[in-house]
Length: 144
View 1: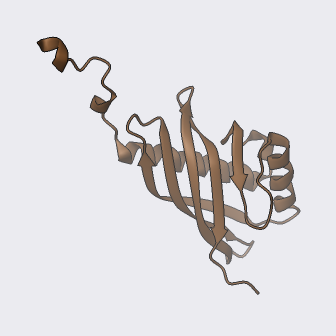
View 2: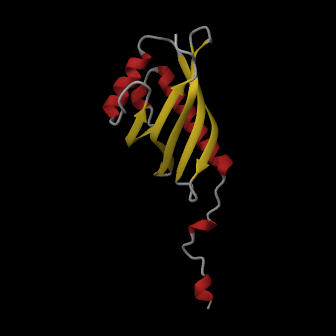
View 3: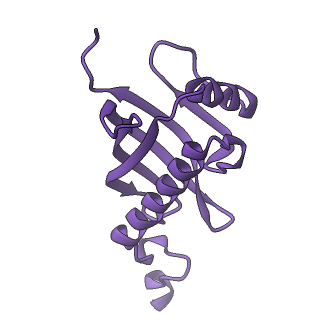
């Protein structure tokens, strides 16, 4: 009779620390911004090899080279800086996947916000570290 009540292999007993996961995701966002702001986008390491990114008014980005080209064209010769704030995380029951909702800010050299908006990113834990599988963003700035 006790075999019917066995919990071995039961993933429902995994304890998920949502605040710790939020800190890990925010650390990934901070690392992305720091490297992006230096212009060394090849070193970002934020995205999984099979990641897909959805930006406004363009086809999805689904390869490392497309992503690199996009990020480099976005950087151009400007001195703008981006930052990300994780506002919410929704981890799976085992903590292996996390949906992040956040807010981004782009400031110019005078620290004036020139673009702000919201984003959603889906992360998966691979080799002990969260990597982004899917992300999308939308500016909340009015169109000119």
